[in-house]
Length: 255
Image (cartoon, rainbow, N blue to C red):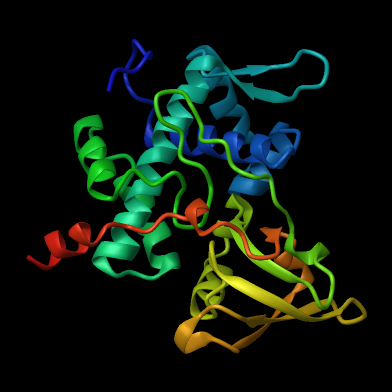
């Protein structure tokens, strides 16, 4: 796979900044240095130093009036390449190696900087070229991101309705405890739930799994703040929207 960057790959730290800016833009959040510092859990001085470096390397641009940060074409290309490696690493670690979502997300942060393009492409083929990460967020390839439904916030679903989990946003992915909770309760892309109750006075909603074999009928109560970080589709969505890793990938690991 050919890439348009004529310079060396951004450092691990720089890649984290580019990925975070990409996430925030994807969620419709204006990106300024203060919010970036809050999201990354670092000081304003640290962000300022990195922003200066990324501007110098022509990976981001700063608006002179609003001070908002945007990715340049080169920066977006680098961020998308890193996200692809991260997403494919998550598939490999969860569906082939057998790690939990939270563990896999942490390990993928290490792998995403170690994989070459050639190895990444081979992993992609082994996994059946998934259109999204395991949490449902689209994987860009060759500068193109697959078209996916936008979905609605799960917290907006009405009591008595049926919903299909579409994706767990990147913001939710940053919460290891939430990821573990969602996985343990089968709240993952492609799974269908009835909304049993929405209790706005205490900030929770209760769901009942309706297509889960062993988990069929399982109920889970989730806070509305957490539910706002998930996207759903009304009713039973087309199963073709959701990727399943080919059996050959698991057989290759077992062999």
